[in-house]
Image (cartoon, rainbow over all chains, first blue to last red; front, top):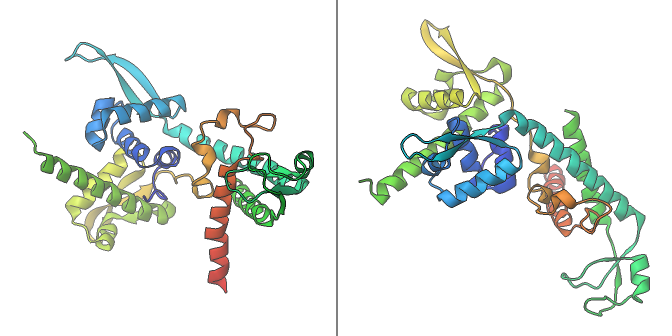
Length: 169
Length: 140
């Protein structure tokens, strides 16, 4: 799936939902004020999938909908439109939010020593928590050993730097 | 009535056009503000002018490019210019926060926090190993 040079709206859709979202987003850009049935026929996706994607995008305020009366059938249908101008600021906000979370995580990683039993399903404990349980994993009862978190700290610094540089552009 | 095979053919044709549209847009974006001549583009992608024009019109309809009519070597052609450059999402691609169901309650004071999030850890380590370590290997 190549999205590097897609429109921001399509990129965003792909980031939050993958292939199905990407197809719906492209269909929304191809024709304005389009119904769920028209999107389903243009993309080949099942109507229930299209509706699920549309409601999720609507919940995230990425699209807007208007209710109109279908002249042929006589009932009300929704026509959807992409909020393309909102996509860029949404992406920007997400970058800022993720950056803040990563900074907090780095602070946490640097503030304590961690202990783990080696079992992937068990959680890592801080030194204080490990003392409380006498260095025995509260889940599997194995002995807790000190964890080297150098790699995660390096990875955090790398990503923080990458996002911060991107936001400065 | 349209057969299943015919429908599948139409669908894959649509997907091909989408891929081609993306490729053309990539080239237009690559040329920045000066844009690129349609004829140049079709030559580079070995397209017929019919297919090429369809793709260009699709991009224009999506308000991604503008088509300016220009006279080049005595012949009329179009210059495609990107109307706005797409946002760069590479640095947050694959970030679990984008699809996390608990994103709205994720903060320092709740049980759901980035400090203990295993998904964030997995994403970061994968990214770090794939990109940074690969870059280092390529350099040496």
